[in-house]
Amino acid sequence: MPTSAPLAQAPPAWHARKGSRSSVASRRQSLLERFARPDSRASEPILYEEEEEDTLRVARPASSLAHAAPISPVPPSPIHAIATPRPTLLFALASDNIDEVKRVLNSGEVGPNDDVGPQSALAFTLTARQLKHRQEMVKLLLAHGADPTAVKQIHPSRPASAAGSDEDHDEPSPDPLEELDYATKYYIKRAEAPQTRRASALIHRSFFRPLARVRYDLVGQDRALEQLFRVLSMPMTAPIVVLLCGPSGHGKSLLARKFGSLLEVPTHTVNMTTLRDTHDIWRSYSMSPYEEPSTCTLADFLLANEGRRCVVVLDEIEKSPNEKALSSLLMPWELGRCSFEAGHRHVDVSQVIWLGTSNIGHDLVFEHQEKRQEPEAPMSREEYVDLMGMLRPCVSQRLGASLLSRVTTVLPFIPFTTEEKLAISAEALHSLTGEETELPPATIDMIVRNSLNAYIPAEGARSLYRAVSNLLLDTI
Image (tube, rainbow, N blue to C red; front, side):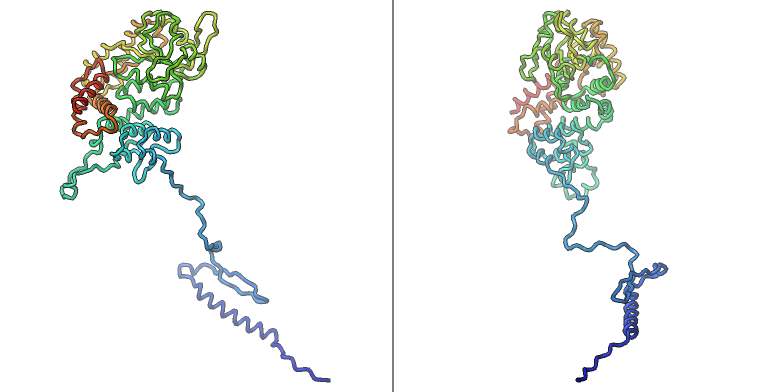
């Protein structure tokens, strides 16, 4: 029988384990040297992770920090990415299209204080001299709440010859407002005035909040607007009836016309000079040149808007040929209900805002202005309240105490200051010059300043528009 080859005898298990233990000890020593701690952490205990390898257990130093996630070859996207705002407002402003700017602001896509590049939208518009509608855009941004302090971001231009001189650093920087036209300067200063912010805060949380924008369509009459906002901020159960009184050409019809458009409610304008009978007021058509021609009478208008907010403007209310025509207003102004004819149901007109314009108190306003210690200074709140108290008896004598007792407030419109006259003339010149007409700054300043020589207080802004038109024709 053949003898089998001798088998190689494996070393005893304790020999293998002994060799393995020595290799483990050497590996542990190398790991300790590799993960040696600084002296500042020498007191911390060393923890080990144990990993089985066959029958052996290899201990490795464990980090005191939590295990990190495996590194991905593709960088993960951030959880909270910073969204880049769409340049919608920049495109609208750069298009020089006032309707497009109005659209994006009204839509809420952008805010009036959004940055346009390195500047705010207002600062960008003020420095964009190539824009033909810059004045309107500035007014629109301010009306929507643009921060007027953005003008401080503007660096006024200096003559090139003095740009590198040492004396340039010693001289104070010129006011950036000085490079703007009179109207733009006026509206920026108006937006910064503390009185403007206080008056706007009165209606900030009410339905009438959009009316605060009217101060960028109407020059002057800050005290009248403040008193109007005070009245609108008070809770009332009776209908709102406001009479705007004072000299012609001082913004009464403009304010009444803007009411409905700013509040986005329907408006019906009645020419009170055409009324002959007590029922004529309900059969009158809207006659405002700024509204669409309508075949709707006032009665139809009130029926269509029954129980809803709307505006009725009674233009030249004191010039009605028959004073009895005003008696039809007694019941709607007191009870908020009216009947257009006998035997017909009552119509709910409690939500109607009644606005009357009148020249009553024309002479009284000018007399009060002349008696002031500083006629050119802005009128104080106390002076305006005093004028209101003097005007109300005049209105009562003209329209009757029974009608006036149902009026919420009577607002006198006061004469313009020199700064306000300059702003009106600058706006008039801007509206009369077409997009193709460019006048040198010196010529613009000359026309605006010379127009004040033809100002007629009794005609107000109309005399300034006429003077600017004549001076512009002579210049061209």
